[in-house]
Length: 407
Image (tube, rainbow, N blue to C red; front, top):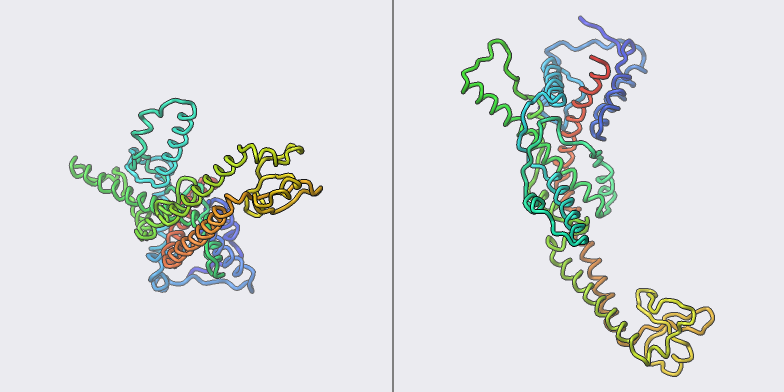
């Protein structure tokens, strides 16, 4: 029998060091949950904890090692130990760049970032009166990228999804930033799934190459296949409906897409047209000699201003008193010499504009609810995907910590 006490180990200290090497919130959470358990044990009554026998370990491991939802940081069986060790060794090969070829990976985020960069470059070229380069046009629709097979593409994002679900649990509707964050997590999850498939492709091509060359592996010189990392990545679940909805929900500026939601496009167009017509009418009014005679411009102020959402022009109070039919007074200067008048010609169009803006806000709120409800329906798979990414982050953290400790 083997006896071991946590009081004699630096286990909590090692776990905290491992948590620091993790870059994602779910990765840190997986480690810190074990840290709290270890702290609780080590601060107990000092009794030793006898390791379970191998048979009991196997029973405890049932439904644990293959289910990412219940997978723990530490193994409860010899097989689990070997699988975690294998995952670390596989990740170490990738992070060391020991896979000596590039593999085709479809990266949604990389495609989006490159296209946005191309559009910015084209806009800059247009401003400088230079046509965009042909290479930019050719690359615009490129979807496949050759990248070295290294660690999973999970850098530069925290994957902190719980605060978003906390908002939902409070009965609130998600807004743009939260939904954009979920969209980014989903797109990265797709990339991670494709990364796992690229590892499987590597295995297949190495196997085909060995078979065609008639090379055996009696001496153990052939590259070992990736087993645990593809298996972990395959746990990611992507529903095509929510993927299509969220990835097409926003335009390049981060606003709800008028293409995906045509009703928004129609209302936005209506608002723009009304605003343009109102401004054009005001410009025409200001160009009239009869209006110029009534303007109160002795203070050097602007010829137009907005009060409570209504466009007004400054008119001398005495001139307005002579002709009160020229519009509606919404305010007056402190001296009382100037009246801020909304011209009669734009009262009706402005009312129509306010109504259209109200309809636009209501339609945007409806779309936010639709997107929120879709996220709620797919909550389990979204949380599962984040857990998978967290476990991959832990594997990378173990590699980094091992290098620091030279272990």
